Image (tube, rainbow over all chains, first blue to last red; front, top):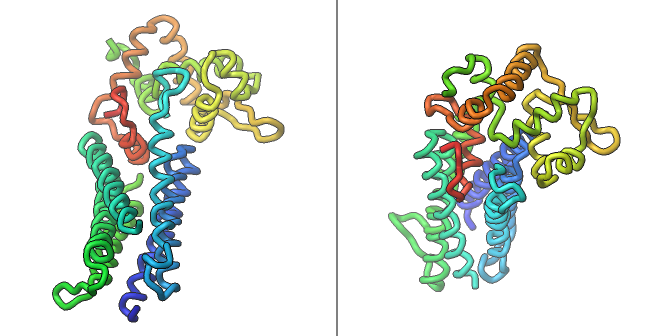
Length: 93
Length: 92
Length: 135
């Protein structure tokens, strides 16, 4: 990958980790698990692009896309968790 | 296999964006607006990846003289940057 | 209707009380403020899910209504940050005892002009069930 591409990836990785940190802060502030899920997701997305930056081979061949798939999992789990029926039907969260 | 993942990621991103836009329409909380745009950007990133690797795997795609991989990166970065903007300015 | 309630009670409910069951939790703690409760004990007392109670207690503690102690099993005690909060709690518990329906309708009638916490809006956006009260 050429320098422009590498630079772009670097920016993306940095912003992903920064976003993840914000969500960690929100999770600590609100104790809402959904924010932890977003934090993990963006951290994994950051790692995904970080790996892409260093591994010079084709993304498809090295199965790096698995990390991308895993990155979306915490958010989906968080949404499911938020909509689970609790003992008290009127309970929030 | 990879193409299925990119397609799945595209659809998931769109779904999350829809939920966020719906929430924004209800509450007018700007954070939701920026986050929704971020997931639109990620959806575009994944969609372009699907097109690039899934539909035209043996060809390098170029658009307006710029490689598709750069366009993909721009889509993701713009989305992520908008979310970062919202996280900094629109929370409390 | 809920307009009968004094302003400080309305503000307290708007800022701190999301549901009747949350108010019940708070009232148990308020009624026995010398005692520290664990989530399990509270869940047994009110016959609700302990995991949910734990989340609620942590939230109420984060908002400055309870004191959370970490030595031993995590326990909570009613200890508001300010005397205004305490006064609001006193008045709210009296209002709840005397005019229960009015307080309940106050809890569930959030006017649209009230500034909502963006993080709460974010979290609520992912609630798919119809009984989303904060829309």
